[in-house]
Amino acid sequence: LPYRQDVLEWLRAEREAGRRIVLASAAEYRNAKAIADHLRLFDDIIATQGQRNLKGSDKLCELRKRFGGQFDYEGNEASDMVIWAHCRYAIVVHAPRAILNAARSSATVVRNFERTPIGWKVLARALRVHQWSKNLLVLVPAIAAHHRIDWEIALHWVVLFVCFSLCASAVYIFNDLADLDSDRVHAIKRERPLANGDLGIPIALALVGALLTSSFFLAHFVIPAAVWALTLYFTATCLYSLQLKKVVLVDAFLLSGLYVLRLVAGHSVGGIAYSPWLLSFSAFMFLSLAFCKRVSELATLKRCSRTEAPGRGYRVSDMSMVSMLGISSGYGSVILFTLYTESRHVQALYREPGFLLMFVPLLLIWITRLWLLADRGEMNEDPVLFATRDPVSYVILALGVVLLLFAYAGWVRLPMFVDASALP
Figure 1 (cartoon, rainbow, N blue to C red):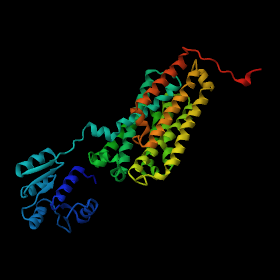
Figure 2: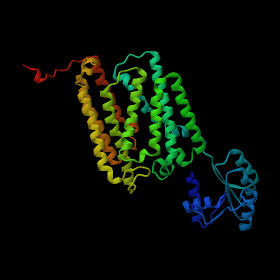
Figure 3: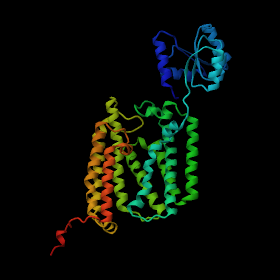
Figure 4: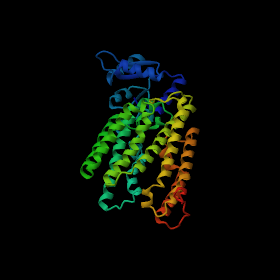
């Protein structure tokens, strides 16, 4: 169940001031007791036992029998109106405007905890709109291959980006539903809309269905070649959410594979020949970022004096090993890029490929800095999102783009490196 922290904090303050707090619910007694045991806030429980449903007037009878008219009542729905009319003071929580107005007309409302509207900001946080930037990877194959793009192909890539984004948002909500228990005790994730109660579970389930339907409907009628990729992506991410995220190492390899899948889909929709260089480089790079995310999470747990990640298979003691795996994967991707600069593919695509070699130290600086920040606990648990907000990453990206332009255009000629084995 979602709990409003502001309401709980107010109740605790009232109890510390000497007031008696009673949980009066129409729910079955065993459910009410489970809530009371969980919150450790209530002095007594009044709930449904047997055939009599303690709701509305029946609840009022029980309250008046125990307390007379000397009690304040906190509620949120129409059935509470009869109780508010006979209590001393009324407290309204998360109620629609009509109920709030009716309560004010029949009782003395001393406190109103307003209903949180499900606005665009709440929906954007639930859909993780900021994560959509990851789906721009579907465009990378066209850029890397210098593919000539016509309007029809461009439209297909845009639709592919939209389909992956909608499908990803559905999966994020599904994942939040599966992770409710662990998210509510997490220092950062407890603020997610589902975990803090801003978004109700029925609405979340409806959003999952609407997003998935829209994604697959659009793909089926515009880019049928991408349906298989979306199906594989959705299946893999659901397995990740339900079970595989708890399996050490498997979770990181799967996350890396999902990034590579976006590249494969971009190749498929654009009719571009698959590049083993691009796919291999991406696999190593995103594996490094997946491990970096885990180390960042473990660093947060370490600061909170926790030993294990809730809902995950990692322990804080695993930090050094996971760091070693991630750093070596990142450096491995740089080695692959270095070898790529000397391949025949580069010679065919770039007039002055030597400038690509200058990109290597930029990659090394970026990866090393990322891992240093993760180890210090100065990264907000997602290196990809961190990079989208990090000024240093933007400077490195800008320098990289300049080098790529010089390599492609050949505006400046670099000194030639001669292979000694080719000399007489």
